[in-house]
Amino acid sequence: MKKTISVLVENHPGVLARISGLFSARGFNIDSLAVGETEDPTVSRMTIVAEGDERTLEQIKKQLNKLIDVITVTDLTQTKFIDRELILIKVGVASSKDRAQIIEIAGTMRANVADLGIHTITIEAVGETSRIDKLIELLRQFGIKEIVRTGKIAMESESKEKPKTTKEEEE
Image (cartoon, rainbow, N blue to C red):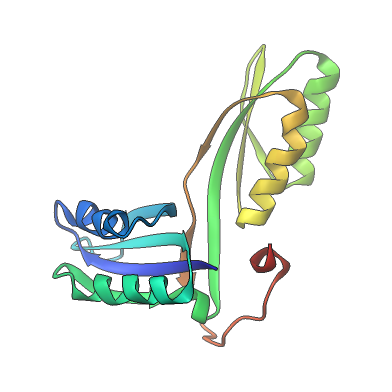
């Protein structure tokens, strides 16, 4: 089971190391980690995506809550939330036909051309992980040279009802 956890922490040196160490000590992999300052510069928000059984994830949440610099821990998968990811994909261009197809795919997927070179095109996209994964799949045929992804960022939606199961969660 994949969980998206939002952790508000004091913006101090070493907090990220302590939190990632907690996951590491339990032999647990972090699928995605994004950290950034909030509206309050003394507080940072960590969005952590991890996969594991319910018991292990529950233990990790309890351990996170015990850390001194942690303000709150929210399991977003238990609420309705909004998530996004940013990606830059550098794709090889062998011909003008390839160039046109890549630009068409970008447009269809609501992505932007961030850089247009002689031998490569860099595409920028923001969206849910499933849409980002689909874009990668469509561009793979042209020869992906490089990918940079931010990892998922997420926040609770105003309506805090538990979400219905989506196709993405089932996969």
